Length: 88
Image (cartoon, rainbow, N blue to C red; front, side, top):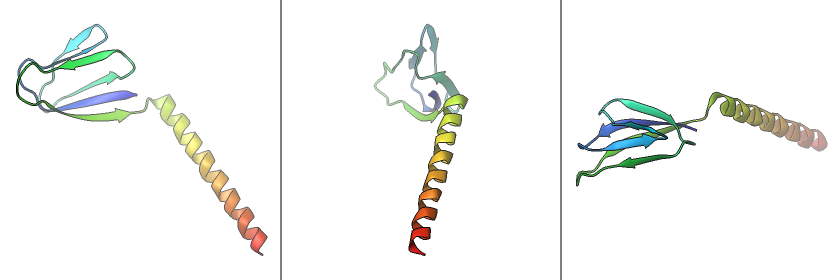
């Protein structure tokens, strides 16, 4: 899963480490990273940090999920056709 952080409120000293890279949020800007990589965030201040998180499936996973959904829709349509043909 790709994770997007949209920084809404960021007190001084907050940070994010993803793998070996360290970043800081900038209010109104986004950071995107692979959630499978070890990551940690910190906020040493007494103020709250507000980050909006958005998750995106990588293109291959999204395509697989879409294909599975289409297969399920086709399967359900066939079940419906079979059911209604039995009623006739």
